[in-house]
Image (cartoon, rainbow, N blue to C red; front, top):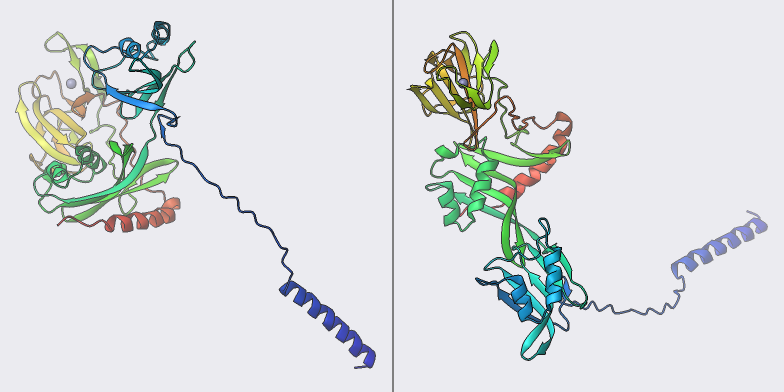
Length: 416
Ligand SMILES: [Zn+2]
C-alpha cells in the first residue's frame, strides 16, 4: 500500500466512523413535551340525557292513570298534551300507557311544591322507552328508543337427575335455557329418554339492560353426554349461514324424505276444506294422500322414535313417529305394520308399514301428516331444515374453530 492509498483509506475510515458515531449518538432534539392531560369527564346519563342540572322523579303507572292526567299533574299545559294526542297513530302510539310500567320525570323547577316536568320518559318494556321532550314550550318532541343492551357470554352445566328442566332449576338457571338447549340438540339427543347421569355443558349469550337480565341470547356451543356418547354442537359459518355441526362436521339436523314411499299419484292434497269421499261433508284434510298399490313399503321420513302403532276406526292401522321435540309424522291406513314397536328407534328409510286401505279409506293409499310443534303442516310445502355437512373446502377452518370451541366447553366444570 502506497502512502497515498493509506491516507485515502484512513480518510474513508474516519468519515465512516464519524457517520456511525453520529447515528449512534444522534443529538436528541430537546422536545418540549406538553402532555395535555385529557380529563374525560363522564357525565352520568339516563335515557341519553346527561343528568347535570336535573332532578328526577320516578313512579309507576297506577290503575286509572292516563298520560294526560300524569303530565297535567306535573305542569304540562293542555296545548302540549293535545299535541301528543294528535301525534298518536296506529304505528306510533304516544298516548298508550299501561298499569305497572315505570315513568320518569326530569325537572329543574318546582312551583307550589309541584315539580315542573320538562322531559317525561315512559318505559314501554325492559328494553324500549318513549321520551317526551317539553323543553320547547311551543312543541313536543317524541322519540322511541332502545336502551343500551349488554351481551354477556355465560356458561352452564348440569347432571341430569330427573329431567332437564329440573336440572336447570336445581342449578339456578333460567327456564328458557332448557328450551334453547333442547332445540339446539333436538335432532341428536332424545330428550324423552334422558338417563340419570347424562350431562351437558354449554356456552351461551344473555342480554342485560342496566344490569337486569332481559332475555337469553343464542347458544354458542355445547356438548351433551347422552347414550354413552359426547354429542357436540359446534357453530360454523359457511356460505354466510351459521349452523351447528357435530364434531365430524355433520349437520346436527336430519333431512326428511320428500315422500315416505314410492307412490303412483297424489290423490288428495293438504286443504282446509274438501269434500270427504266417504262422509260427503266438507272437512279439513291437513295431510297428503299418496296413492300406491297395497303392500308398497312406507318408510320413516326421518330418524325418530315410534310413539303410536295401533288400529283406529278412521285411521285404520296407523303409526306416529316422533323425530324431535318439534316434528312428528303420522302414517295411516296400513295393510300391515313393519317390525318396529312403540318405543323403538327408527332411522330414515326404515320400513314402518305397508300401504293398505284400513279405516275410512276408498282405496289403497297412504295418508301422511307432518306435525310441527303439534300443528299439522302441508307436507308438500314443508321445507326441512338444511342438513349439508361442512364442505370439504372449509374443513381446515372448521377443525381450527372446532378445537377452540371444544377447549372452551371442556373448561366448564360439572356441578358436584
Ligand atoms: Zn288423507
